[in-house]
Image (cartoon, rainbow over all chains, first blue to last red; front, side):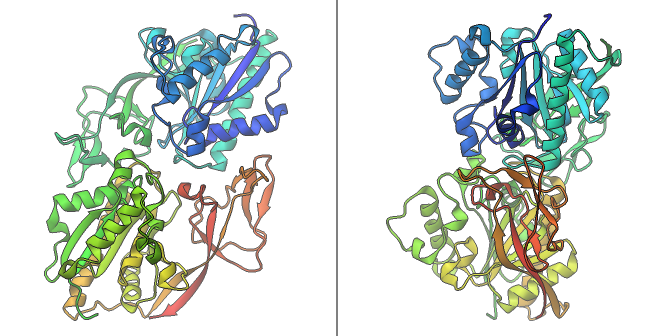
Length: 294
Length: 294
């Protein structure tokens, strides 16, 4: 990759994550903000029906609809399946208008700060993440683990370059001005970086990066009938990206018993108490903190 | 009213307000917590379909379905209209099993602390509110204005005694242990008070009460097509129950212009940035702070 020609900023992949959905509306209204000298920037509202309804999705989670095999499956025809195919057509199978960098804007009820979610280890993605982390210490970098691209169901599977922003904490269905402004600044810094990349002038940055690598997910304490009987422990709430040691509290049950972390070694939990993950059976994701050379 | 015989604790009137919905499940599982010597306590999950779906409502806002004329209208047959009639039958038109005190449990994305929402000025409601406010300074008392009971569309219109708790800030669709525990303590203190009331031993409390009286609502800045172009100003976010003076910032537009409050006198805004009120065109409610004698 020597030249980026087209950057797509995607918002509203989840219709109740307003920060991204309204940011791309702002960018569409004030295009100078995202115009750069040596590539084209386009915006895309990914799930307009869900956004209009103020819900994460209409029929199924759009950001789980981008498995290659599903995109090729003509029998999948829910609103979100069709929308995923449309987005693929728009961003990938579009001849000269193909996007070569996709930024997908998300928000979380968890205290995710300004998280970059990597779905691969492309050197440019890593360098860009390190640059943004250097600009703003609220930026943290989380890397998902997929055995292969074929297992990645996210919008970002469409394109090797790019990643998602996951900003929080923010409730679903509303805007918080400070987080909106921080996210906007980050988007603009990202575009500036890509402009300099195209000019062969990559801004210098640290040669190392702290990466939080996905390990596993933890479900809520549940009764045999599947109903939950406990909550995130107050000591863990909002402690995303902080070390969790064996024996530390993770849940408190409805009858006030503390459940502790029983793993063998220290982990760094994120997505703690994400509202959208209750239905997925995820109370938090555990990660391993690593420093890597880039 | 000399004797309270039956107290109904209602949760999940809005299906994505988990604090109340899970609290009544806890109470149903551990009934000793709400059992008192001289009245019966019952629990009710008001909108089970919406709770199962993790949404505020299925077809329409249940807590706007209790207008007397609507409850009597056989042509209204949405899920929530039918549910409202069922709740009326259960709690009111139920002979000896009629509830004479209704506590309705809500939560808000706004920084409402532990708010009591009064829908009338019954002396027992006021005394109970003053008692709870004395126990816990996070408790604040907001009084809605209805010209008559016939204009009150809330669950609490079913019964002269009782009110709602509105706790926050908390995102929709999740549980926060600290707020869950604070709400539970408040419910149990309320039941203790009613038990003493039935014994003729009303706990002494202050003779005055700070009341926030509803004045008006303020919508978001909107374009002619109805889309919003601004957010709650960072200086106002989370400042519920704090004085707002003429000239103070209330919104910031997407192009970074500040909009100030242009009223003639100081007001006390609440429900600032409540997610569920975006669709209702309410960015905040303005109130007047008053001290009353009780």
